[in-house]
Length: 462
Ligand SMILES: Cc1cc2nc3c(=O)[nH]c(=O)nc-3n(C[C@H](O)[C@H](O)[C@H](O)COP(=O)(O)OP(=O)(O)OC[C@H]3O[C@@H](n4cnc5c(N)ncnc54)[C@H](O)[C@@H]3O)c2cc1C
Ligand code: SF4
Image (cartoon, rainbow, N blue to C red; front, side):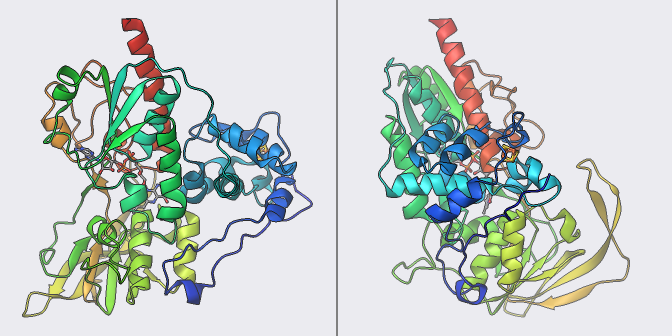
């Protein structure tokens, strides 16, 4: 099914300019652009876009309000299902979710659902529009561990149901990956993340930072000594993986998590901060996900020449399509079908290069993607001063190891059922802590499901 109007393009900073600053790449739609784009939506009776959204935002309904210029009403519709719309509109992989299933995408370009969601959320923030209804408190205390998207989504839903919710966060700032992982040029902290967290607090949610659950307090002490009736663990997957190849201990090899945390949370890019960060003249980033793109584009902005090394082809890159497109426009070099076998050092113990081997694609593996196989004798070297490893992360074992009866699986993830119930009664878990590294919206979806399950469990008990 075609549409008479082409998808309204979104304005962005020019690649050569943005490659040297940390300002947001995308400017978003104006009122006129958003209303025009909204007219493209057919208002399908059986909207596939909505089925493909992990939190089931009522997409045709909010878009129909945008079409009429009723932006506060559109925000009210989104707020029924998502507590972080300005964030989701910016970082969700829409091409594989709502927009990937939009009927207009079959023969042309899907409706720009993400850009419209972002527009509505930004418009409300800029115009001081609040979407919260009156809440009747029940005084029952629930603890949430971790203030990333999963914890925030769970806490919001529980607070709306009347619970007295406290989030415990180990870092000095709330937001999880939204704050420490995803860079400013994709997700501005003061303009976007902070106001959305303030909206969650406005529901009555308390956030205690600098609390290490498993050290400062434990799940048992929260439940037995502090009166929390249930706990939701949303502690994410912050433990970086390495390749275990020779040379990984050289100076100049760093995990993407550390690199991005120094830059984002600790503001290394800002001359007013003293946070040290080491970027060489040349940087190689290993990996092909969002984390790899963020690390590469951050290193570029700090002044390096950057190459991404990935063992499959561009088709298999797990990063959002928009991030790959932006990275290429900015001048990042991609070396596909290449896998590191050794990191090369100089006589002072610093990185001077990386040795890779060419790969070809073999049979599909368990994930359905074709497995990369090394081509014998095809090793080659790339000169570099820094290697950033962006190979994925796993959950930190601290909470499971300090909570008797809480089971973990082989991959170090907390074992939980569909609703987030763990092997400990009244203890629920979700997001990356359960699935391993995934996406913001899946983490939020898990938080929402767990909130409903916690409510049911506590009601059945009273
Ligand atoms: C660099 C980067 C870029 C990404 N880009 C995208 C993207 O574009 N789109 C997308 O959809 N997804 C993206 N992701 C993935 C996405 O951010 C995660 O899937 C999502 O944040 C998971 O949410 P969560 O709430 O489960 O965990 P997190 O966001 O990791 O939050 C967990 C929180 O728990 C806290 N915590 C951990 N242990 C303890 C403890 N013992 N006590 C107290 N607090 C604790 C942590 O400090 C953290 O704040 C990206 C991830 C990274 C790292
Ligand atoms: S599938 Fe596309 S056209 Fe149909 S309601 Fe959803 S956004 Fe609109």
